[in-house]
Length: 358
Ligand SMILES: Cc1cc2nc3c(=O)[nH]c(=O)nc-3n(C[C@H](O)[C@H](O)[C@H](O)COP(=O)(O)O)c2cc1C
Image 1 (cartoon, rainbow, N blue to C red):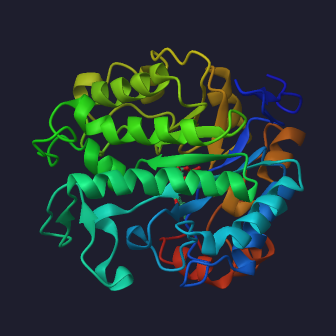
Image 2 (image 1 turned 60 degrees about the horizontal axis):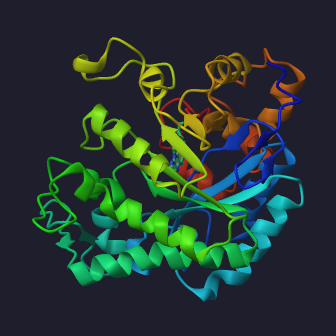
């Protein structure tokens, strides 16, 4: 594959200049009140300058009480419009698509952070979460839809609904825990209903030119692999989505569940009929060789996490030399500072073993 001359056209006509997307990464660098900081702006716009064809923001909360992290960038009210206008414009200035990830942490919103009990599809003792009423589910849906409308107003090219990693939408999908007896619990169609309704609502309220996407994680999300595949297929068949991002954590691995381990996770998902939806995968795509390997299987674009932290211009480097390998951690704080990470992000990742040189 000729990686440098390989743009991607979405079904609504929007063009991504190459196959590299910066994966959504929570970095805790915004202000405690949810406003954009210069550090967060710098971190993301530097990645756009480094030739990521699509720059995804960190998970951005659609409801004040769905905040999951300190220093999280908010998008739950018009109060944040100026922040997002600035960020979207700063990313687009470099020819990248600017996309914001829409998030609600559900039971994983720390009480300490939101000042009250978190909500979830069902009560949860461990987190002290309280089950949403049907009326509150309708509000939750609206929160996502309104945030998407706000994002379009701010100039973003699109949104990604965060349906992965154990946050509120995954909490709905969870077969072991979601025992709601109404239309939002029980069968897989019921557990996925809120996702389908959110996507439909966003599609209805945003323009055709606006990219609507969703992230799903198949493992450790309380779904059988066949259910995760079913959800993805149903999302595609619904026709409201332009992009589907599958968060595999390791794009080359086999499923944990032995029942499905005859092929890799990626091979499983490639059995899906993607129709005109463009799909990306994330997880362990760390070198130029990894990028090529994944794209050669037919994946439309790759989501890059760690290598985008280590090198703001990872795409530029790989397009120049497909054998490019990122610097190997542990790396110095100075290296990361030069790559545009602010102090709060450095504090956040300094908990990782062997990433930063002591
Ligand atoms: C610091 C950090 C923050 C992350 N925050 C988010 C997030 O806000 N939303 C999300 O969907 N995934 C998040 N992830 C997961 C990444 O998007 C990505 O899927 C994962 O890191 C695997 O890709 P990698 O092996 O290239 O790092 C985060 C990962 C890291 C390392």
